[in-house]
Amino acid sequence: MAINLQKGQRQAINAPKFTIGLGWDVNSSSTGASFDLDASIFVMGDNKKLLSDQHFVFYNNLVSPDGSVEHTGDNLTGEGGGDDEQVKIDLSKIDSRVTEICVVVTIHDAETRRQNFGQVRNSYVRIFDPVTNEVILKYELEEDFSIETAVEFGRIYKRGDEWKFEAVGVGMKGGLQDYLNKYN
Image (cartoon, helix red, strand yellow):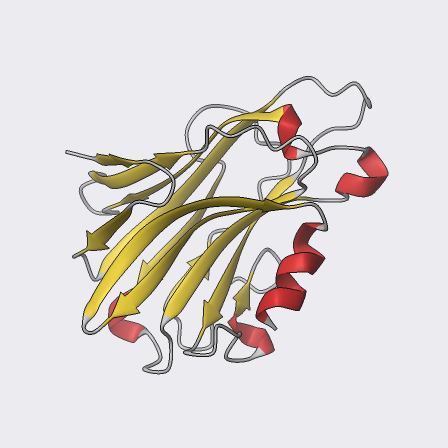
Protein backbone atom coordinates (compact mmCIF):
# COMPACT_ATOMS: atom_id res chain seq x y z
CA MET A 1 0.00 0.00 0.00
CA ALA A 2 1.30 3.45 -0.93
CA ILE A 3 2.37 5.89 1.73
CA ASN A 4 1.06 9.42 1.11
CA LEU A 5 3.58 11.96 2.33
CA GLN A 6 3.11 15.55 3.44
CA LYS A 7 5.67 18.29 2.83
CA GLY A 8 8.81 17.63 4.90
CA GLN A 9 8.04 13.97 5.60
CA ARG A 10 10.58 11.27 4.82
CA GLN A 11 10.23 7.61 3.91
CA ALA A 12 12.79 4.83 3.43
CA ILE A 13 13.03 3.29 -0.04
CA ASN A 14 13.88 -0.38 0.27
CA ALA A 15 13.71 -1.30 -3.43
CA PRO A 16 17.03 -1.23 -5.33
CA LYS A 17 15.18 -0.43 -8.59
CA PHE A 18 12.22 1.91 -8.83
CA THR A 19 10.62 4.49 -11.10
CA ILE A 20 9.81 8.09 -10.24
CA GLY A 21 6.57 9.18 -11.87
CA LEU A 22 5.75 12.88 -12.12
CA GLY A 23 2.34 14.21 -13.06
CA TRP A 24 0.48 17.48 -13.40
CA ASP A 25 -2.45 19.18 -15.07
CA VAL A 26 -2.51 22.76 -16.30
CA ASN A 27 -5.26 25.33 -16.11
CA SER A 28 -6.17 26.91 -19.40
CA SER A 29 -3.60 29.63 -19.93
CA SER A 30 -4.71 33.21 -20.34
CA THR A 31 -1.50 33.72 -22.31
CA GLY A 32 -2.69 31.40 -25.07
CA ALA A 33 0.60 29.51 -25.05
CA SER A 34 0.72 25.79 -24.32
CA PHE A 35 2.54 24.49 -21.25
CA ASP A 36 5.65 22.30 -21.38
CA LEU A 37 6.76 21.09 -17.97
CA ASP A 38 10.09 19.28 -17.69
CA ALA A 39 11.50 16.92 -15.06
CA SER A 40 15.19 17.35 -14.26
CA ILE A 41 17.33 15.22 -11.97
CA PHE A 42 20.42 16.47 -10.15
CA VAL A 43 22.75 13.61 -9.11
CA MET A 44 24.98 15.00 -6.35
CA GLY A 45 27.73 14.17 -3.89
CA ASP A 46 28.37 15.14 -0.25
CA ASN A 47 28.87 18.82 -1.14
CA LYS A 48 25.31 19.04 -2.59
CA LYS A 49 26.80 19.76 -6.02
CA LEU A 50 26.53 17.81 -9.28
CA LEU A 51 29.28 15.19 -9.62
CA SER A 52 29.75 16.43 -13.21
CA ASP A 53 27.71 18.15 -15.93
CA GLN A 54 26.69 14.66 -17.14
CA HIS A 55 25.07 14.03 -13.74
CA PHE A 56 22.38 16.58 -14.65
CA VAL A 57 19.76 14.27 -16.21
CA PHE A 58 17.02 15.89 -18.31
CA TYR A 59 15.45 15.71 -21.79
CA ASN A 60 18.79 16.49 -23.53
CA ASN A 61 20.87 14.13 -21.34
CA LEU A 62 18.69 11.10 -20.63
CA VAL A 63 21.14 8.84 -18.72
CA SER A 64 23.66 9.45 -15.93
CA PRO A 65 27.26 8.28 -16.62
CA ASP A 66 26.87 5.19 -14.38
CA GLY A 67 23.49 4.27 -15.91
CA SER A 68 21.72 4.48 -12.55
CA VAL A 69 19.39 7.35 -13.52
CA GLU A 70 17.44 7.26 -16.79
CA HIS A 71 14.93 9.88 -17.93
CA THR A 72 12.37 8.22 -20.24
CA GLY A 73 11.91 11.33 -22.39
CA ASP A 74 10.21 14.69 -22.65
CA ASN A 75 6.41 14.97 -22.67
CA LEU A 76 5.75 18.26 -24.46
CA THR A 77 2.05 18.63 -23.60
CA GLY A 78 1.22 16.86 -20.33
CA GLU A 79 -1.99 15.62 -21.96
CA GLY A 80 -3.84 12.60 -20.60
CA GLY A 81 -3.95 10.88 -17.24
CA GLY A 82 -1.18 9.20 -15.28
CA ASP A 83 2.48 10.16 -15.17
CA ASP A 84 3.58 12.91 -17.54
CA GLU A 85 7.28 12.07 -17.22
CA GLN A 86 9.20 9.21 -15.60
CA VAL A 87 12.71 8.59 -14.36
CA LYS A 88 14.07 5.09 -13.75
CA ILE A 89 16.46 4.61 -10.83
CA ASP A 90 18.75 1.60 -10.28
CA LEU A 91 20.60 2.01 -6.97
CA SER A 92 22.67 -1.12 -7.67
CA LYS A 93 24.48 0.83 -10.43
CA ILE A 94 24.88 4.14 -8.60
CA ASP A 95 28.30 5.76 -8.31
CA SER A 96 29.59 5.38 -4.73
CA ARG A 97 30.12 9.18 -4.53
CA VAL A 98 26.37 9.88 -4.96
CA THR A 99 24.57 10.86 -1.76
CA GLU A 100 21.56 12.74 -3.14
CA ILE A 101 19.25 12.74 -6.14
CA CYS A 102 17.14 15.89 -6.44
CA VAL A 103 13.89 15.89 -8.49
CA VAL A 104 12.94 19.26 -10.00
CA VAL A 105 10.13 20.20 -12.37
CA THR A 106 10.33 23.41 -14.40
CA ILE A 107 8.11 25.22 -16.89
CA HIS A 108 9.92 25.47 -20.22
CA ASP A 109 10.17 29.06 -21.50
CA ALA A 110 8.01 30.25 -18.58
CA GLU A 111 9.07 33.89 -18.72
CA THR A 112 8.33 34.30 -22.43
CA ARG A 113 5.02 32.45 -22.10
CA ARG A 114 4.15 34.29 -18.84
CA GLN A 115 3.46 31.03 -17.02
CA ASN A 116 4.02 29.87 -13.43
CA PHE A 117 3.14 26.97 -11.15
CA GLY A 118 0.05 28.85 -9.95
CA GLN A 119 -1.45 27.75 -13.28
CA VAL A 120 -0.56 24.10 -12.60
CA ARG A 121 -2.72 21.77 -10.51
CA ASN A 122 -2.81 18.13 -9.39
CA SER A 123 1.00 17.97 -9.26
CA TYR A 124 2.54 14.88 -7.73
CA VAL A 125 5.61 12.73 -7.52
CA ARG A 126 5.31 9.02 -6.87
CA ILE A 127 7.80 6.20 -6.53
CA PHE A 128 6.71 2.77 -7.71
CA ASP A 129 8.03 -0.71 -8.40
CA PRO A 130 8.33 -1.01 -12.21
CA VAL A 131 7.77 -4.79 -12.14
CA THR A 132 4.62 -4.93 -10.00
CA ASN A 133 3.47 -1.30 -10.56
CA GLU A 134 2.95 -1.12 -6.79
CA VAL A 135 3.19 2.48 -5.56
CA ILE A 136 5.72 2.74 -2.72
CA LEU A 137 5.05 6.38 -1.88
CA LYS A 138 3.35 9.46 -3.26
CA TYR A 139 3.59 13.17 -2.54
CA GLU A 140 0.97 15.58 -3.89
CA LEU A 141 1.92 19.25 -4.01
CA GLU A 142 -0.86 21.27 -2.43
CA GLU A 143 0.78 24.70 -2.23
CA ASP A 144 -0.09 27.51 -4.58
CA PHE A 145 3.11 28.57 -6.33
CA SER A 146 1.85 31.80 -7.90
CA ILE A 147 5.22 33.23 -9.00
CA GLU A 148 7.45 30.15 -9.13
CA THR A 149 8.54 28.65 -12.45
CA ALA A 150 10.47 25.73 -10.93
CA VAL A 151 9.65 23.41 -8.03
CA GLU A 152 11.82 20.88 -6.23
CA PHE A 153 9.28 18.08 -5.78
CA GLY A 154 11.51 15.86 -3.66
CA ARG A 155 14.90 14.39 -3.03
CA ILE A 156 16.28 10.92 -2.57
CA TYR A 157 19.22 10.86 -0.20
CA LYS A 158 21.51 8.36 1.45
CA ARG A 159 21.96 8.04 5.22
CA GLY A 160 24.37 5.28 6.14
CA ASP A 161 23.39 2.35 3.93
CA GLU A 162 19.76 3.44 3.59
CA TRP A 163 18.12 5.52 0.84
CA LYS A 164 15.20 7.76 1.77
CA PHE A 165 12.80 10.07 -0.03
CA GLU A 166 11.94 13.51 1.36
CA ALA A 167 8.86 15.42 0.16
CA VAL A 168 10.32 18.91 -0.43
CA GLY A 169 7.77 21.06 -2.31
CA VAL A 170 9.86 24.24 -2.56
CA GLY A 171 9.66 26.59 -5.53
CA MET A 172 11.94 29.16 -7.14
CA LYS A 173 10.96 31.95 -9.50
CA GLY A 174 14.16 31.92 -11.57
CA GLY A 175 13.30 28.65 -13.29
CA LEU A 176 15.79 25.93 -14.05
CA GLN A 177 18.70 28.39 -13.96
CA ASP A 178 18.18 28.92 -10.20
CA TYR A 179 18.63 25.19 -9.61
CA LEU A 180 21.63 24.99 -11.95
CA ASN A 181 23.23 27.85 -9.99
CA LYS A 182 22.43 26.14 -6.68
CA TYR A 183 23.67 22.64 -7.56
CA ASN A 184 26.47 23.24 -10.08
